[in-house]
Amino acid sequence: MKPFEHKKTVNSGKEFESACRRQGLALTIQRRAIYEALASRSDHPTADQVFDAISERLKGVSRTTVYRVLETFVGIGIAKKISNPESKARFDADTSRHHHLTCLACGCVLDMHAANLNNLQWPTAINNEFEIIDYSITFTGYCSDCRKRTATDDQHA
Ligand SMILES: [Zn+2]
Ligand SMILES: [Zn+2]
Image (tube, rainbow, N blue to C red; front, side):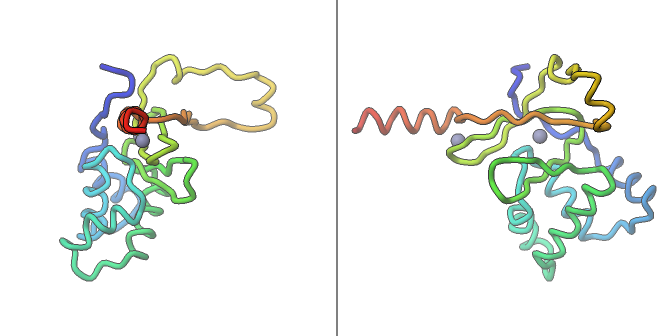
C-alpha cells in the first residue's frame, strides 16, 4: 500500500451503534445518516459538506444540527476533528492513528499511514508538563492534481 493511499474508514456501523449505546445516545435517523455520510468518504469533509451530502435525503435537518451531531461524535470518540491550516474544522470517521497530507492550494486532506510515525519517542521531560494521549501529524504541501495544474499553467504561460 502506498503510504498516502486513500483508505476506507475502519469504523463500521456496528461500532457506531455500540458507541451510541455505551454513551446512552439515542440511535436517531439523523445521527445515523450523518455518521454514514461521514464514514462513507475519506476526504475529511467539513460540517457544511456533510450537510450538503445529507440535506437532500434528510428533509428538515438543519445545518446547526449537523454541526452539533458531528461535535457529539467527536465527544464520544467515533470521529476526530482534524487540525488543518483552514479555519473550518474537518471531520474524520477513521479514529485509528494516522496522519494527514494537506494541500496548501486546494485544501484537500489525504490520509497518510506510516508505521514509523505511529511510535514516536518524545523527550521524557515532556511527560511532567503534559500527558500526551494522542497525536496526528499534518504535513503541508501540494497535491498531485495541483502540481499538475501548475505544470500545465506554466506550459501555457
Ligand atoms: Zn491540491
Ligand atoms: Zn484521516
